[in-house]
Every structure is written in C-alpha cells, then in structure tokens.
Image 1 (spheres, rainbow, N blue to C red):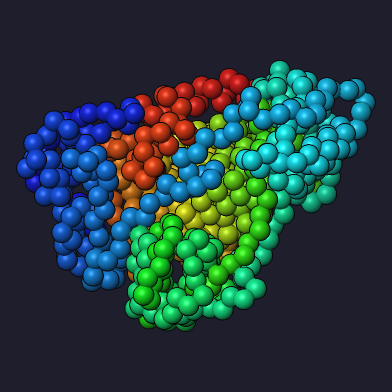
Image 2 (image 1 turned 180 degrees about the horizontal axis):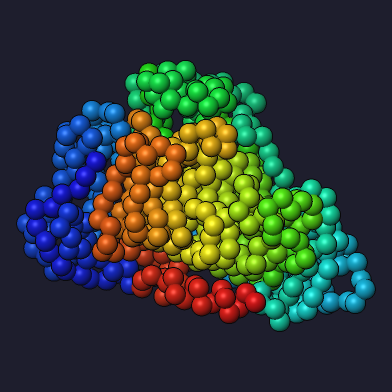
Length: 579
C-alpha cells in the first residue's frame, strides 16, 4: 500500500497549537487544515491517492484533514490480500479516563480524609492499608470519589502489597522525587506487587443474565465500522453494554489465512471479545460507541453479539509519589523473580489513573490485566529497572496485558527497559501510547506477541519499534499485532509487517526500516512519509478534537503538548524529578 501526491504545498495554521500543514515530500503530502486555502485547492481528496496491494485505488486518502472543516477525513483501504477497499483507520480517541477528553479530578477538588507521616520503625504497609480501608468506608460523592489518603513527604517501608479494592479512593504523596513521598517495598514471594488496583476478572466479559448470542449477519464487518448488522436486534436497547465476538476458524489460522496453526494457535484460544455500548439501533443493526479494530469476516469464522453486565471498580487514583523495589536485586539474566517485581498492576477497574509517579528497582512498571478499561497513566517515570537485563519476560515498563481496552499512557518515560511500550497476547484494544520516550532499551516497543489489535503509538520514541510476524519465537508468538498505527514516532530500527487480511501502518516514522529478524520475506505494512513530521502532529489529539471539540484536548493535554512535540521536556523532567 502506497501514498502518492501530485502536488507539493506548504501551508500552515494552528488550532490549539495543534499545527496543521502540508508536508513537502517526494512521495506524499499528508494534508492539513488550510483556512486560507481556496476551495478548489483545499479539496485535499484530490491530492493523495491510496493504492492497495493489488493496484485497486480508493477514491480518497487514507487520512487527510478537510481544509474547510479542519476535521479528519478517512479514506477506505483494502487489507493485505483483499481486493475491495472497505476498511478505515479507526478512531482511537475514546482511550483514556471516562472515554477520553475528560480531565482527571483536580487535586484540590477531592477531600483529604486521612494524613499519614513517616514513622521510624512503624509497620507502614499495615497503617497505610488501614487508612485506605477507612477512606473506602466514606460515602462517594456525585463523581464517585470518597477521598484521599495523603502520605506526607518522607520514606515509608512496605512489607506487604498495598491494595486499592474499593472505588473512589485516591492514594497521594507529596511529590515523586527523592525528596518527596517514597514507598520502598520489601515484599517477598514470586513476582511481588507494590500496589494492586482491583482484581483480574475473566477474559470473557460477563454476560447479562438473560443474554443470548446473536449472530452477525453481514459477510464482513470492516475495520473502522461503527455499525454491526445482526440477524435480530430483539432484546437490545440503546445504552446496552454489548460484547462483539470474533470467532476464528481453522481456515483463518491455516496456510490460506495467517498461517499460525503451525505454532499451536487454535480457534478456541483466539476468540476475541470487544466491549462496546449500543448508541442506537435500527432494523437489523446496532450502532456502537467505538469502532471495530479487527475485521470480522464470515469466511474466517464470523462473529456474534451478546449483552454484557460487567461490574468494575472505578475512580481510583495513585499520584504524586515514588515507588521503589529492592535496589539490591540483581540485573543478571537468571535473577530470581522473588521480591517487588510489579510497580502497579491493575485489573477489573475502569476510569482510574496513575499520574506523576516514579517507579524504580522493579521489572514491570505499570501493567494491566483483564478488565482494565478507560484508564489513564500520565507523567510516569520508569527508572533503574532490576531483574534480567536481556532476559525474556523481564523489564516491561508500560504493558497492556489481558483484555485491556481504551487505556491511555501519555507523557511517560522509560529508562533501561527491555520492552518499554508494549502489548501482550490477544489484547483487544483500542489502546494508546501518546508522547512517550524510552532510552537505553535492550529490545523493542510495539506489539510483543499473539495478535493484539487496535494500538496507536503516537509520537513514541525508542531504540527500536517493531510490528512483525515473530513466528515460533517465544514459542508460538506468531503475528504480534494487527491494526497497529505508528504515527510520527521515531526509532533507530523499525520493522513493519502486515498480517494477511489485516493491516499495520506507519506515518511520519523516522528510523532505519529493516525486514526484521524472524520473517524477512513478509509483506510490509502501509507506510507513509518517513522523514518529515506529518501533520496533525498527534493523531489521537486530532481525533479527540474532531469528536469532542477543542475543550477535550485542553482537558487532557498540557499547553506545551498541545503546541507540539514534547520529547525533550519529558526526558529532562523525568531524569531530574524521578531521582
């Protein structure tokens, strides 16, 4: 899939500091807002042509900004091996707290219920947990918030895991630096956790008591679709929580499909569950609140829909503190996993957040598991990791695992990770990494293994970034991900493969592109220009602006972030304040 341009223009304006411009490039000009451009010149649909693998052309660009409205226009594309251009790049903007574009609760707006000071020789874990439990007993306000446990500046020792298991409780410190609030964990046991938020749920979202599965009736539901045709909509109503299920078959897993049956993939183990909300319905179809991020095709098994009744914790916050594992933990490969291994692990929780936190001396910084949805992790620093420096399954800085969906990690930093920004197996998505950087990584960022879908890497920088067929690495990793978008990101080494009947994209990616280590003959994904920064600077922020307006961007972005790239600011701040 290629982009072509028959004109070169350079014009720019700014909205909220999200600069839009035509980008001069011999291969492509991804277009942008041009309030001063005349109607004919501003009809950017004529500027770029999208060509599919087999030469069939779509009528409009894959992504462009309408010169008159300043909003993204989405062209249709054909997946690898397909003739018809029916898919569109999905809207990722519902990722984050309360569905994106909603500001986290201001610190001054939440009542401080308990204040603790450092106490020499005290059992800090027990008394902090007691304070958390006491705040959990307060009634929630109209936002679902009960109050704050404030840990005053100083050092605390945690001999056990802290557990946030009731909605509406915030654990806050007096700053994440060495002179702020520092929680040193001495927890023992295999893969110990410093803080546990919620509890992992089943990977299959719980059905409503009276729910039955309804077969999807259309031949194919494309990527980007917001409407799903069904044999019957009886029993469904606007506002229903639903799960859209993709049922793979042996044909999809076999040689004619993605060819991963040889690595042990089975249809039963690769059923994918996508949680959505019905926004309206008509005769034989439902409209949903977020797009499909992996096509559902009858020839590959088709899909179904059922009403769900998932109950999760919410409105839990961790902010303004530093978490430390054991600095004496080794870094040699083979170092035992006993001790503080996870900084923060979250499961069975929505609309939660981690902000302004440093995490040191652990293997995994922030990791989700089943049931982590609509959460925001921002201004987090992962520093001085421990455990095997180049060993498998070690040093995951920011990891979306389980059935995590609609999560946003932004303005965050990783130092010395193996995999800094990654996804695990069968993560349904969508999920987003925005304005994040890593230094000193020993391996890549990107989908790590076994078919994660709908992930946006938006202005992410790391040593290497890959979305590829990993074949039997792991073993059994196979295709690591599909519908992975790398937007204005940068790496020294970059690999982009496209799975059969799916697509991965790179737009504005900087770095040396290579065929990869495991499957050098694989077909590349869709690649736009490589050197110039493509506008809009951030795909996520532009999609958010289109959906909810300028105010939504201002709610979640810093002023500098709204104006442009902030990698240098992130690196300087994380290194200075995180130590």
